[in-house]
Length: 105
Image (cartoon, rainbow, N blue to C red; front, side, top):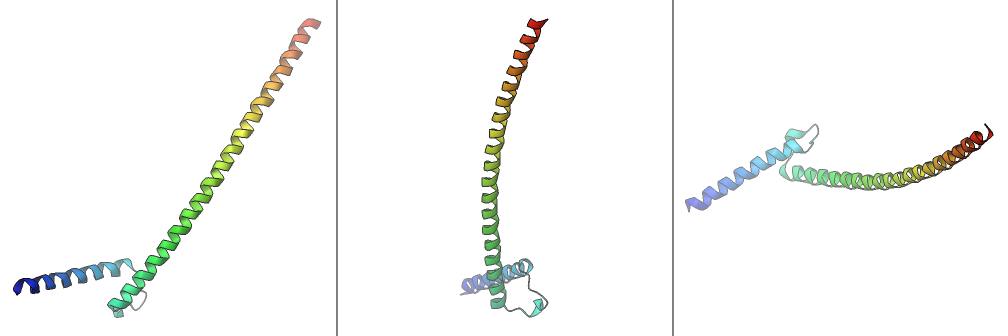
């Protein structure tokens, strides 16, 4: 009979410790001393939902920014290819002019 009572005391002590830790994690407001265990657990659950919503919004924003980054990267690559093409056309024209300039001398 002593062993079940000791386990019960140990379990209650563990629960008290967990509740104290939870009080440190959950913002309780001005009346922090008067919070009952059910009120603390309710506030913790609401806080958890709020944090989950914030995480979902943040992940959605990250996905949007990654899509935008890929789009901008493709545009940058496209502009780079166009610049190479324009540069090569310009250098061809320059070399044709220098050939004709040498013929006139």
